[in-house]
Image (cartoon, rainbow over all chains, first blue to last red; front, top):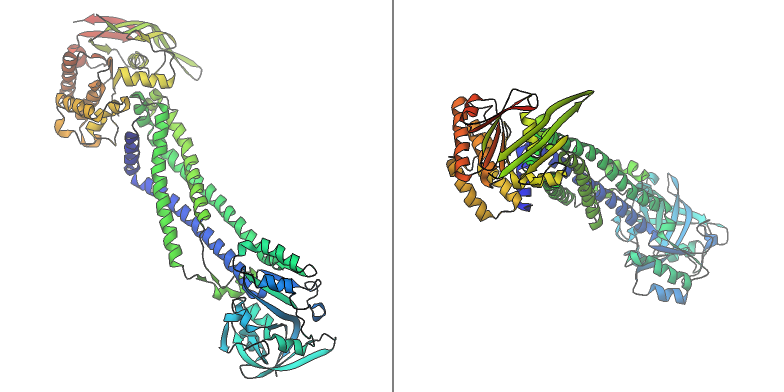
Length: 407
Length: 228
């Protein structure tokens, strides 16, 4: 059979009933667009949420004293990194790391009191490690680990009814189990992606915190960010060998909710694909069956003239394939266009509180992976071909004399 | 004369619900090469059924059908499709043409299925379009042609690849008398020019009158066979 004839017939039949072809084209292209857009949105949600969790002090992995994660108090502090661990942290795989003091505390202004986590940092090390390195929106960053100032989140500053230049008092348990307190002048206000972060943390110089809490040189945690997150497992094994007496955990263990959200997001993509699949399958099969039923006499004529049943089947499939190819191209272009328009991200800040419940960032940057594109296109192609086979078989199985007399 | 079609005791029974309808009863028929034959008879006499059985569109319930010495009954659908493609040309009462193809493309359709080259197809379709007087309308789609012109295209398509026999089922039923006469005269001239065998079912007296051989069917049996 001349393929040109097959596709010429198919192409002209596609143009013959333009409204129906348009319906099929819109169904396929909209379906693909929806699948790609949804996949990109969920992928962006996952990646932004993961990045947000890593940037919010977690890093790719953390090192603690053995019982710190169960009871994150000054009682479970540890010495700074050993020679072996320090050598590993200076290696090429590490983008940034910092030793922190991190203990529960109470911060008091002249008007209000709030429970917080006191974090003592070396600001120079945090610039590439966590959000606090680049989130100061008013005032200044801490100068060094000995800085006597304090940085508050905007939301906490509002709640405490305090502002830059004013003093607050931080109170916590010291290493000797006494109650320690110290006055700090507010030198900076930070904005965070989530208001809960702005409420949860106050930042001071690490040495200042150690001095206040009578910890000497001890610290609460070491946070590490790698250049390549894909190499986390290997680095983790090295870190555990370098610090066998300490608790070395990846972000996936430290942030189980985020991990669960990412897994749920991936599952949502497939659930959405399945829903689209079922909805589109009914639409496509129904439309194609109608198209075949209307042409019963024509298929009878083609068979009477000597066209084999297999070629009738191939002709109907060729018609579907043409619409499918056009639909895939159109749907892909629509998806590329809409994702390009949203290159800067989708701002959910007006839904910030609701979004936080779901672990979302304020801004989601839809991200399309090659595999998402391939799987969505494969999904549509298989769906459309499967949906076409039944009507095509019905056309091919018509006995020519019945088709000619019934039509 | 070489025998093109031989029907030997062909019967065809249709079963509908609990009824068995005998459309053909022990029909014996011999048609020679180059004959122009009409198959006349009232509605329900079995004309169309006999054409369908000879054309491989339907299978006889019993008996045998032989075309150019080869049995065609009891073949698979794909084998019958090949048989029709190579050996039979059809002209139906209506819905003869593929609506999305032009007159020329409709004529070349069977040749394309046969795998004939484009050059040869063009030459043959040019010749046949001239024979049927439609050279000027070669690129028109069926919807742009009159009923008579559509039937001319159907005749052209039926004979262009020189089949063993052309089977025409009531080809003039939807045409006025002038157009009917022109169509039959065209078929007769092509029969004379190319020596192609025609078997035409009809109850149009004009067609029967012009045919050199007239077979009459009644109640599924041949009741008359006259040659002019």
